[in-house]
Length: 385
Ligand code: PLP
Image 1: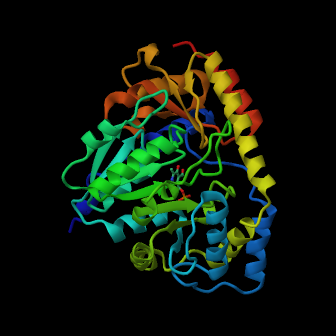
Image 2: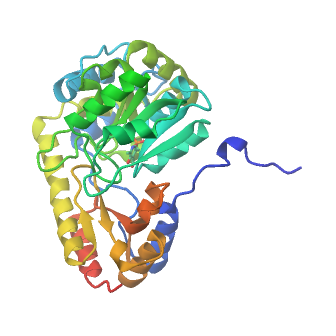
Image 3: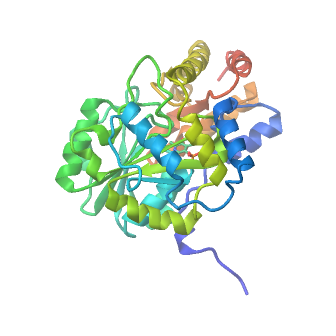
């Protein structure tokens, strides 16, 4: 008997990220493709989790997460995001931001519903949309600013559009949505009764004092917004799988129902570690920003000198480089040629677009130690198209 894969995965789009990692390993190169940060986890977070294990906090937790973590998140939302939420009814801790996003889609949208992604988009958003039988719809934002235009947003909506995804700061562009753009989203979402799903996993990684604004803090958006946040990037604990959704109680209840089915709960002792981390002083967050800003500056000036024009990001830890003028037929051909010649791996821009707009771009991740970044830009400076 032969088994065929289920229809729901038939349209999933495999990413070139794995291909580039494989090719990078083959040539023994520097992998600036995949987004793996390698900063150490803060002692506060690590010791909080160790203590929880020593204290025997190893069993299932409530599906929405342990009270101390939800209370710490409510405090952080008030302090840093301008959001007043009830820790008991509005926060759902999940298996990473990824888990919170997946539970949100399954809980709040029906198969066949349209959901708008702004491209360049994060590949997991698209694939999770496809997995849930939703119809992805696209609005292309254009470099260098990736500005959101109200008329273009309205034109991208279809009669079945029920939701819009906002990723701020964005992976891969590093764009931060400003107050005027979020006001556009509020107007359009109100008029068309859209759910807004904001992925803010990079909220603490922002540059040049550009503020991160949580969409839910704008006008009346809170009631129709699911804010999705996490600890992977803030505490450099990508392997801990801890994130959360924040929403109106009725929405949070539905998300929690699915969260329970998919994950039962997030890992118990690690939740206590994250709760301890949220008590970190403001200097921790300032240093995190400063460290990544230094890395951003190393890579952007190196790319500039190498003629791989960087689209300087305002946040997150990726930079898109404009390689259109080199005339490669595809971004994949360009990324492979750069890897072959310099030993530095990037990701083809086509991984982040449906339209052809990504063919002139490649993405570098700069969540690496400074020495690796210096070596990478030295190698890239030798690139001859
Ligand atoms: N959202 C975005 C935009 C990301 O870039 C990433 C990781 O690269 C994630 C979510 C994954 O987050 P988590 O580790 O919390 O699942």
